[in-house]
Image (cartoon, rainbow, N blue to C red; front, side, top):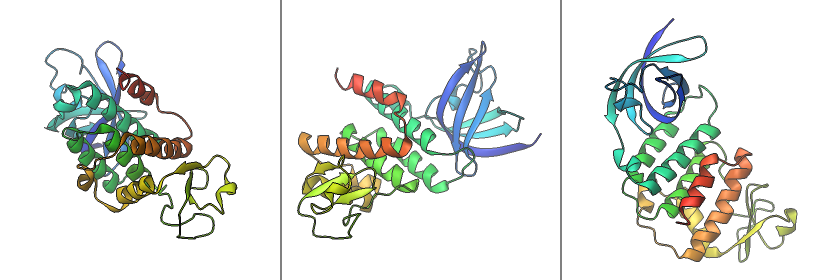
Length: 248
């Protein structure tokens, strides 16, 4: 059995047996890794701090036939502010599930890793989490190869988009002439389209001060979330919890 070291973020876990936990880690070199942390739920376990959800740690792992095993871990960043706040915790869990669903096993991507690490730092300070969610969703889809065409009509290539529809099926915007190509396309305003373009063009941290009306936020949620769910082909379980706490 081989032994290897990697930095990784804990993006999920489930309890196993009496004191163990099976972790889902995301590493820049190895992508998504499943590993068992033995005895981690026991009091004073040396693995506890570095294996909590969202923890960014340096891991020493032993390769196994079905599951790797965590031998040691050194905490680099705990992101405890996320876990202490119910809203941030819910959004963080949703972001982590989107990452897990959209990533294949052992598909390495340093760019996606750095993007998600930046997401966690921003999640500790971002005020409007609804805007952050739409930004994360669209940017993650683009990084995973599902970038929508929103700078011209996806069907005819026309750029004079006076009235705009967004088609998740076709993967982009439709002009009025082409809207019949998808009868489920969602009509969006030019303002909402402008925000979507900003999200794709600007860096994540440049959008932290973005202020939007509730109407625009609702438009973006309808269009972008429909696009995400179409690409993933299933609804994340954490989205239901996120919708529940938003009503509190």
